Image (tube, rainbow, N blue to C red; front, side, top):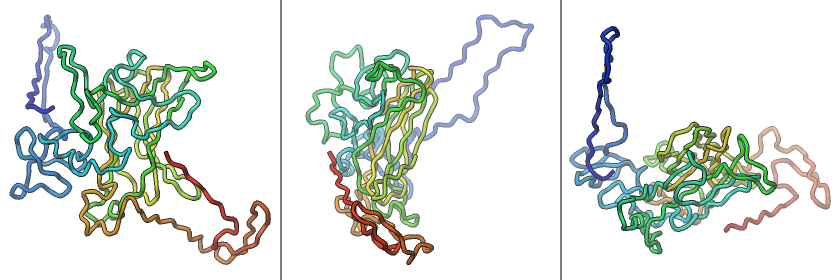
Length: 358
């Protein structure tokens, strides 16, 4: 909302009240609004650390850095979406209006994520509109203009269509089999390089500066679950860590999720996973995915950032064996021969992994 609002609580007396029973009562106390209003500037008009100063509804205000480059215009002049947001790598800042931004399905037997606009095919589940453009105005003949942000991604858009990703639970597989309870759909992002070391340095003012933000909807009386994992790519196999999990029917509203990225030191990608509930009324949807610019070394003091370069990262691989296994003869079987070597040293067998990224 970009205008002032007033909350009105209205109590209506029943049409009939029996004097033989106690009269009904209604009471309100301790009304609070949680994270609805920006914090005012402090210390002679200067915001606290991890805050951005801007004007909101023509009033000088502070917003949290978690709201910067999150595809939502918080400041009157949209300055919160012009903090090096255009320098973020492909796939890290996307409202899905112009494309999928590198999001791809991880093949599953039946269910999959689909880019979609408008109401979902099954009634009483899934969104009727996306989060970026919002509900259409039936009384306005003028098409909704493209979103103001991210401006660098919207040059080819004539109007705001309203795309999002969702999973349709009312589908059949290649052999006409129906999806059933706990059937899964998995979608992954592009591969990202690790964040700067300050993100994992508890003594740094930029500790936990790398965040993932997105909007989601869980609408349906048979809702299952929606989760997010981070998958680190290593030479010994991928390491998957669960970051976020949500379940239960939450209605037709879009909700915001903000998650701190763990202290990853390897290349990684994110996975969105949803599971079907007891019946088909359990569609899941996501929209307006973004990552904090600090994940890529942007908006960080160069003195603290050091020699970090997102596009030329330094990987930390811990290859030291456990002390109990030092200088113990080990047998390695390769494709052609069997070797005896000392544990703790490089294997005589050399394997080369070639990764092709699209």
